[in-house]
Length: 516
Ligand code: XMP
Image (cartoon, rainbow, N blue to C red; front, top):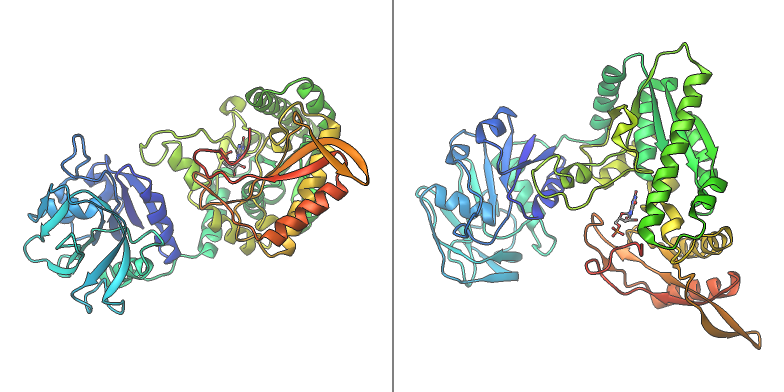
């Protein structure tokens, strides 16, 4: 394991991902964890992430220098670099010499462990206020910039390495190569971590955890719950029952996909509950987004509990249904403060937001994985491409994509419009490029149009295509005009009561991805 020590900025997750892209397993730990505890995890290497811009800032996190004396290879990045420099006797000046953004790096030791085989001049991403003017004794300075005399250093005997910039961001053109040089050459780690190891390891763990007991899993049709269910099914077979609650807020073809494709690929025992009437009745007259979310969450739990009771009643003499499978991902764990002690940015709730007082023991086989890794595990398990590559879809479904009251008729309109947008994006080969593209019906808005010589007074539909790495931040996708034109023409022609298609060009922040 490579430990990524998180100094509170948003970079640690990205670093952990990059390490895994280098096929080395990595985990994030908070900088407040005692060094002895970190070392007890027997890491093969340690990476110190970026953080606040200055080691001299008030309350800036520090680090016990014992971390540099344990014989474990360490790579400091940005703030981590400055910490390493000051801890080992180098000089970091609080000069106010700032560097932010793209910077030119001059490599002075092209044959060094980190920089070998990379250009003498390369673009790197900087974000710091202080500058290192002298490396610690015994260290070789390997690169500089116009502002910082010591922008990288290394000590091969001690296996300590550092760079002032952020190699983990794509703007640093050779960042991944330098990270891999640290891992393979500096720390001597072999790139052996793969998703098939994950599958084998998780299957063994699930079997040990569940034993002869039974488990249930709420299936949403989304990637995470599907992969989690497939993995658990592989481990314990028919001891698992999946429950799919059709709340009527699903997209076109979604229920059929779960009922047919997913079951065919996994052989999972599936219980489908058609609860659309119940959800529509509960949502009648409600326009407020938060209230809608609460109602959907509450109804979901009721239906789920009912299904659970039925499963027990059908085979009361069997082992108890003790476990609940959840598709929790690593970013959920980290962001909820479970991994790093960072602030709880957002309380993620899976599928329908099943509460803890359901009194289950949780099986969370994906809690160490990132989304793209989950997709790879899904592939490994033979799940259909349409499930593995599908875009994220919120638990409350189309219910939070109708601005205004949710009715059966409006859901039908939105389902059609959404299906057209998805079809055309897929046909244009854009599925991998965009993170997701919500289609939103502005049911409370009407505008005047003209169609076939007649006046129309219909609703607008919003296209919200975004690109993102983790949904925490996002940018609006610059879709080709001809694809937008095609979607617009088809939606206004084929969907009754929709006479206008508009494009959302807001990034996140300030806008969230979903409209509600
Ligand atoms: P926002 O709208 O907060 O969404 O920018 C970020 C990502 O989360 C998805 N999302 C949800 N997923 N239950 C879910 O399972 C929810 O209640 C929920 N709300 C938003 C959203 O689609 C996007 O991918």
